[in-house]
Length: 194
Image: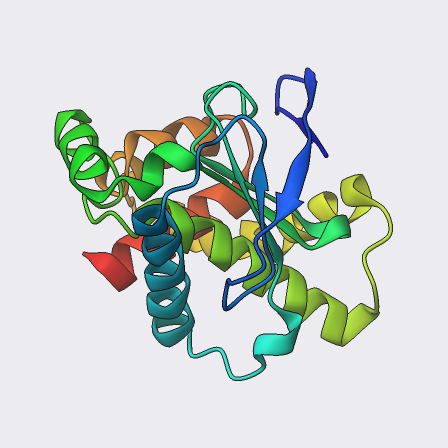
């Protein structure tokens, strides 16, 4: 497997399929997957499915549990053209992750579901695109579409003088960078998790 960070660097690592998992879960060789972590990832996926009202579980992404190093310190990522969701193994240590979230200045939520839900919202957006236009073959083309799709809602928030820092610091940074898909994803995380 390989993960390309938003900064462009690519990390390659080996993964193996988790045979006793309820979903299509793969784990990096750099992660020592414990039963508690597997239970946590299943719990997070189940909660996100409920929150998002997912009916067709067959279209769920391949979940790759990767190390902090594998993901260049990212907590999670979704790659639409591969229907693959990366999740940092650190987010599966619930108590430690809750402590980490408590240290953040302005996250969308302090709920440990935050990262998984954020990435599952990206997945849901991609599935809506596939239903309307067909398979995603070019990540850049899809990203341009989804950013433009969310621009109108973000523009409405701007007209209402909405302060994106009220969503999260990340949403505020993404707004400045023109990543309206990320702004809308953080907005939905905040609405769903409070």
